[in-house]
Image 1: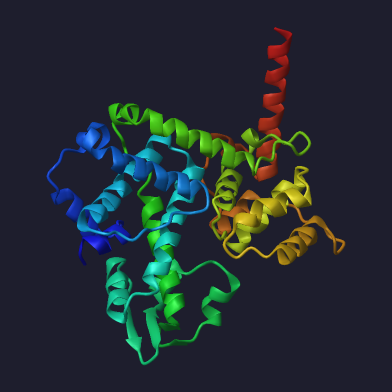
Image 2: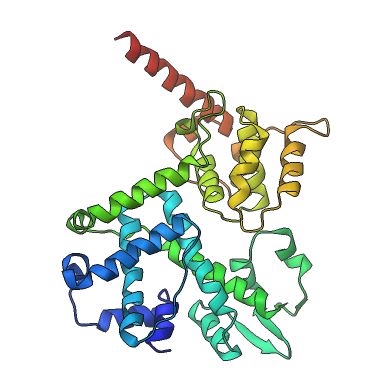
Amino acid sequence: MDIFGFADFPFISSAQKYVERLDFKLDELFSDRAFEQIRKRGKDRVLSAIGDGIIHYEYPDRVSAEKELLSYPVARILVSCIKDSYLIKRYALSEAKSSYDLIKKLPDGGLMDFASEFSISSRIDERSYVMHCADYLRHAIREQGWKLINRKMNRGWVYLSKVEFARIIEEAVRERIESGLPLDVPPHICASLEDYLIEIRNNLIARKSEFSIEEFKEIMPDCFPPCIVHALSGAQAGLNLPHSLRFALTSFLLNIGMNIDGIIEMFKVSPDFDEERTRYQVMHIHGAAGTAYTSPSCATMTTYGNCFGKEPLCDRISHPLSYYRKKARKTYIQKNLNIMQ
């Protein structure tokens, strides 16, 4: 792959090696005037991720392609300086989605190279792309249609169309980018990028306000348990949450008083959003069929692999709602004490 390919797919190992061979110091990338256009493009990548998504452009020459490639590490540094879990998820998802249209247009050999890049055992069998089931389970989207029972499989190998195979690679890209963030960035580099960071933070605040749940009664988002914070962050970033985690998030929010339309609005950024189906599911959990569901206990969350970011308070409770009540009560008492003082 040449520099034009590296600019399209800056997250692959060979692109990273190319950057490492370039003759400049890291500090120059974040302070030298010669790299100002690259820094601006890195900022634009992050802003696009917060907004409608990153768009790849045609590169008229090698210099333009190299600038595009270098904007990727700048974007990663900017995201890392902010250290916001929602931004990290949103950025990783946007980078992966922007590469998907390019990946699915690759010839068979190029797709096989991508599979090797992510240690995916695969081959082409007649008109199908065949992937080992262990790798399929590692990267498959957690949706009904992607369950292994719904796939054609022979002796441990799963058969996919080219589009499905590319979608698996997209998920592997997202996982790689997200797992690599935030980077440990020296404070002086973050300080040198402060003007860019201010603009990104402002856009991030505006974006989050679109999904604010503070307007619903007296809901206190700062008191959410870490598992719900994780689920909410993923939903707002547009990730396809596993069914069990989506149920846990929806039932929790309904249990504490969030309205149905607010929850549906929250899920609108999901890639496969269907308003009619989502409304039916939310109303069903709310009790439209006669039974209102309580959010899962901590034990159930752990069983389904949905216990994230465990804190000391988690050891003293057995249910996410108990975590919320305890923390909300403590916050309420502290707030009133401050008023009295």
